[in-house]
Image 1 (cartoon, rainbow, N blue to C red):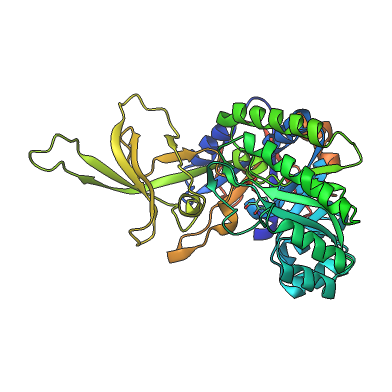
Image 2: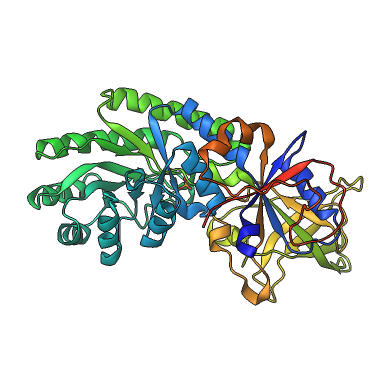
Length: 444
Ligand code: PLP
């Protein structure tokens, strides 16, 4: 039963927003656990924006960023490819009906059994950045189409990746290309990743330029490079729209200047670009402590708020992804804001969501909304200390759903019924402000 409920999509009519949906669920009065509202429409809008901004670049969504089936199925329906890092991710994506040609095995250091699995299911394109990887691939999958992953770091990034992956394009890559050629392997092209949450647009230009020179070096060795992979690093939130425009301008200009030939296929591996903004998290304040200002100190009382999701749950992104989250009260408050901190529910002092925030006075039972929470949150969250990982409640606008998205999805067991069952785990008698139907998705 749980599985079916988790795969339920609420089709929204009239005017609504993720926050109005959260409000409605919360106002049922019986919701206690944190939850996400996931808007499929946001994913569709981002896909359309990608096509407009980067018409030459095919997106292969990086599954590691958020492996929620609702997101993967929406992207599969839209026609994106997928970047998988492991056997399990390949299994997941192929189980949704995605053909192996639409998957890149983009982990430069792969386990032998994972290479054998990729070979067995026909995922032919994979990355490498070392000699030993070439040897393993020669042994287990000599027909693989290889992308040499080079290092090309943004001046700064939330999560730099070059410290772990990517061979030096000048000192190491030529030698690796030579070895690949001697081994008779197929080097299909070049890939790089500028760093996740990159803060520099120009780095994409440098990456494309480096790739160009390695294409030439590979051709001189008799290899047949034909695929350029621009990796990830694209921003995922509306507030960074201008930065995305800047990146697109750099990428398009670099492609025109270094890869004018259309015979070279260009792909990228965006993760947070597709995942971040589609997920809005709602978490409830369940306790608080007032810390009085110390005598003689010119400071206000500080309030510590305890909420039902923390760094062992969704807010792992504060620790691992170096995100700075911001909270807004679900219900508008006329009160002025006061200094406070926000803590997770576990009995661990590390479990601090926001060390220093400004919020209006809140009480136990008040809810906070955290926007842009879809990237590097859900797949890493754990139920540590007995606090459940928030459930995802998917919504989609009726116009978008009936206007094509529904047909693009896999066959659905549709069970359309009028609200009031806003929160399937509840049996309350709600009078919803939105008319909605639920669709049970036939995702296994
Ligand atoms: N590709 C690879 C190989 C990655 O390791 C990552 C993230 O770590 C991504 C793509 C996605 O990056 P982003 O979410 O910054 O777009």
